[in-house]
Amino acid sequence: MSERERDAEAPPPREAPEKVARAREFCEELFRRMGAEVEVAIRESPEAIGVSLSPRPGGRVELGGALLEAVQHLVNRVVNPRAEGRKWVNLEVGGFPEATDPAVKAMALRLAEAARRTGKVVAVAPISARERRQIHLALVGVEGVSTRSEGEGLFRQLLIVPAGPGASPPRAAPRSGSGRDG
Image 1 (cartoon, rainbow, N blue to C red):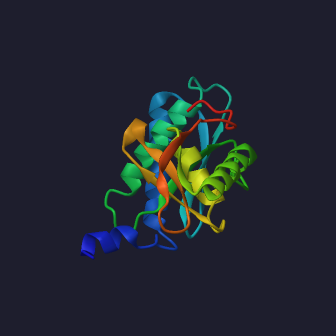
Image 2: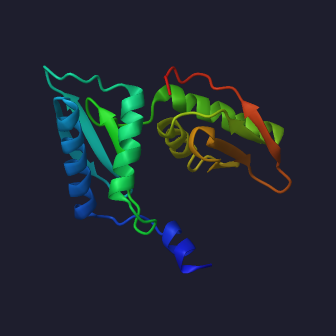
């Protein structure tokens, strides 16, 4: 294994105050320049940096799904310019969620059961990065399956892989149950 591969697989640092500060500064300045009146709150965990955006009255910008996904992509590029020591930055509007969206979690469990039952890899139709991450997290520790993402950009897919040798190639799974634009 090369040094670069080892760095990319290394867990994120437990505390990364410089990344937290960079995330706060980037979000505050970007939204200020856009004319969005938002309060930025930060919560760091050992795995990620959470950024909560609370709209204030008088803001000229709606914090919708597409904007949030774009800003999340940008802040992750700014905070994590290199593969080593990467710490995911997750943006939320209106506070920090305590758990995965129940609809996304239910969909993940249904798809995992289908992968186990059929013995075939289930490919989830392209969904937002946030939903892919929620599915990955929902299936951590679920016996009989693992997850991985393949592809780039808009064509990036999440694969739910049944345990055991000889798993069949992926079959497309329709995007359902999430109720999101994305």
